[in-house]
Length: 70
Image (cartoon, rainbow, N blue to C red; front, side):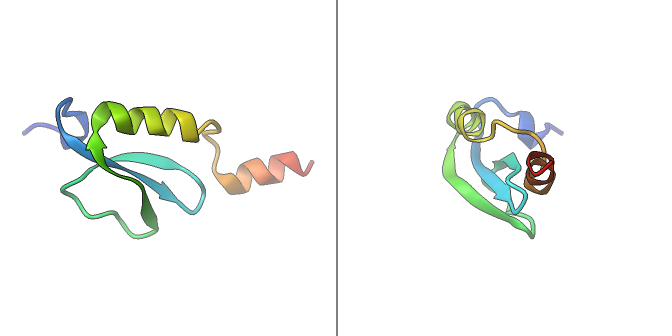
């Protein structure tokens, strides 16, 4: 069985959680609880470009906020 996350010609969405973390997600799967669609269905390259341009700090938002308050 092929991994749907690695399908180069697949259709994907970009999900984001409350901590600002992003995920490439196969469009045929429902978003898990706690995640919302940030970019509707698109090709893999467009989704990866969106993630790269919108998620520049890999830390969860709560950790980044705590670190900036020091």
